[in-house]
Image: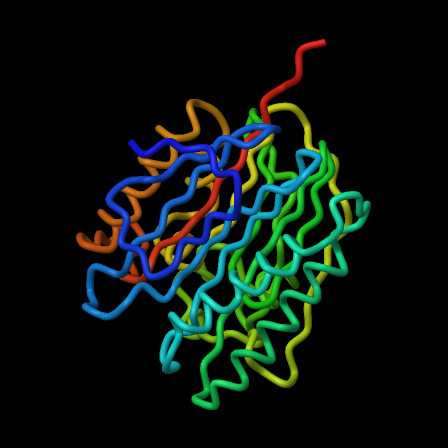
Amino acid sequence: MPDSAPLASCLVTRQNMSEPRRDRVPTGEVVTYSAKSPARDTDNEDAAAVIPLPGGRLVLAVADGVGGHVAGADASALAVGAIAESVSAAPADTADLRPAILNGIETANAQISDLGVGAATTVSVVEITGSALRPYHVGDSVILVVGQRGKLRLETVAHSPVGYALEAGLIDANEAMHHEDRHLVSNVVGSPDMRIEVGAVLRLHPRDTVVLGSDGLFDNLHRDEVIEMVRKGPLLKQAAAVSVLGRERMLDPDAGHPSKPDDLTFTLYRSVPTVS
């Protein structure tokens, strides 16, 4: 399986990967997978970015071009590209990446709007500095932080009617998975009404796993399945298992499992415990 150590940002756009890619970073490892829907011949409209920065800092992003809108692949590529450019231009000694990340998302919003074709995308971003993680998101691409024993330490709320109903307790996770309005998104990059949700800083525990995923992941695997598969074990091996199961679900619907053919992109991060 591909294994590399990027010295600069790694942008994944319009890819149809056969297996996940691992990137070693100073604080641990990142595994990324992105493949187009098996039900379409069009470009993969998802994108991802792995952005290592001086001082061992790291920014990760996943974007999902909104289905049903033209130029979805362009929109997601612009989103991760603008974020990578903005954070890479930040001073090496800056203690706060938040302005650079927000500027990158806002720049992407303007660039996508300027396409003038109604393009849009979701985006989820995490910045990791040492053991501190801060999430950012627009839309319904999910961020999870999972402990080694399976404890869910962070889950972002999808910016969608179904996401809000789930958070409010009006429906349960199974109802949300099969809801007829699950495809609707309330907040996107490429809209004049875009809003960026910035989460609180979370202190990562040793061996926590961070997950960023497009809806191709969470429309085909239950959240608890994802948690169980990524919480422990070699990250590259677990990512490969997730990618295989996701594609199997898309190709072979079963009454007992979700199945929605779509582009599938996810990024996993796990820190390497330091030895004193």
